[in-house]
Image (cartoon, rainbow, N blue to C red; front, side, top):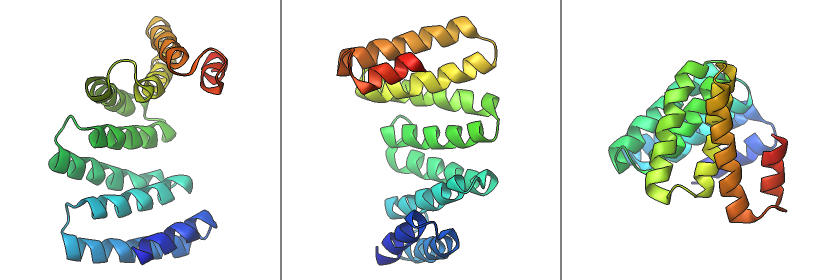
Length: 173
């Protein structure tokens, strides 16, 4: 874990080249020790992918996010929240590249997983709805986008109240 934490410290300090080297070394060690499809490998892959993402190196991040998704599906099943989070990360990476049509089915699947696992009025559901809504808005599907935004606001208001920062932020969005 020492290499992983050291990589994270370097990343937080903006020393991305050092962080990348350490993450890759950590990944090689973890793959050798635990195998290619292990949760510790997923942890390091996620950190490395996010490191690329914050540097706007989306093309380098994409195959890592895809690999993370496949591993999580294998380890946890296709309807597990870990798969939902993996779908979100990959979809977000596509959004940053302007690939809304690739992100849409991932966010839809993520939403289905979160609704099934956490229930229709959970905060994770409320967080995904505006992301999918934004895609619909970009596609000119304004009625569908508005329905999702209203649903997200309703959930947020129910969970946190109408004076909460989360609710006010949703209203502004």
